[in-house]
Image (cartoon, rainbow, N blue to C red; front, top):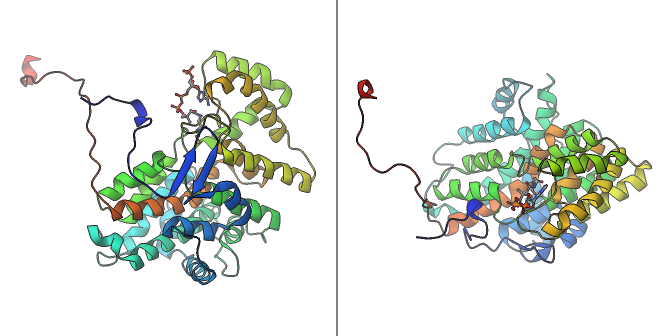
Length: 384
Ligand code: COA
């Protein structure tokens, strides 16, 4: 019998050439390109195409892709109506899962291929990826207004993906520094090997379900606080701590109670997550440009230092969610939208894995170690 490994830790679930992690050295690469370089030099559009197609695009291919994304930004009136009928108090991830699954209902059987040859139809795979990537951003931004009883802000076609997202979200002309930071955040969250939500997408894809349902499965999985939901918890935790001078007593108490410190630790990294390093640098740039050091950032720096002594020996350091929430918070984004923004980015990786799964598909069907009772006779209700 094979050994049972809780959480499938260290068990290869697939062969993939999309991204790789060196957890000892703290390196993340998409298709071989280091995330540090991509965050500094690429754009979300270029990185998404790199993830989908496997190579850095030519200028012409990138321009085409960019135009296609711009052309697919609008969502149907019916989707907006579905959103309007959802409770305003609901979590944005529940709304997003509902809206993305609903998108699929507008495509007939002849448009959504559920045959194993689907991955060979490159036009179909590309077209579905463009539609879903473009619309996820519109849905998340629209919810910001719909849940307050307003009409969503229509997408603009003269803006990049990140700029347009910010514009639809806030209704304001995007600030160049904020747009640059959001673009880099979208790049950094776009892909991360076989994590829980990507695995959920792959399992769903392996059944040949429609790509809308594949992404709905991934969204539900990303929502949990041990995965994409951690960035919201980080901000709530820092608000609870309040000020740097409260860090020590707060941390001692939490560690004594064996509680999780949000935004710390990662199954794959024994070092600080390379994305946390980039985000921390961006946060410093933000503070220098905007001129004031937020108490939240100061508290986060003090907590990181205090955690190093207690958790460093276990290989537990800040992960991507530690600083991303603080940045979003500084930009006035409500904390319950952080994970939905994560999904607006991770959609690029999910679509790449959907395509990869279809290209060499076998339905996932793991086994189990049964721990229940032996076979036994049914007892009629009167005899129990
Ligand atoms: N706070 C406190 N202790 C932590 C910790 C954290 N955030 N993350 C790990 N540890 C400790 C564990 O308690 C365990 O200690 P022990 O050996 O004394 O029992 C040790 O470090 C190993 O952790 P483990 O739970 O085996 O790691 P994992 O790989 O199963 O879990 C996470 C990884 C991400 C789920 C975990 O680190 C976590 O819950 N982090 C907080 C949530 C978060 O930020 N998630 C976003 C990930 S990008």
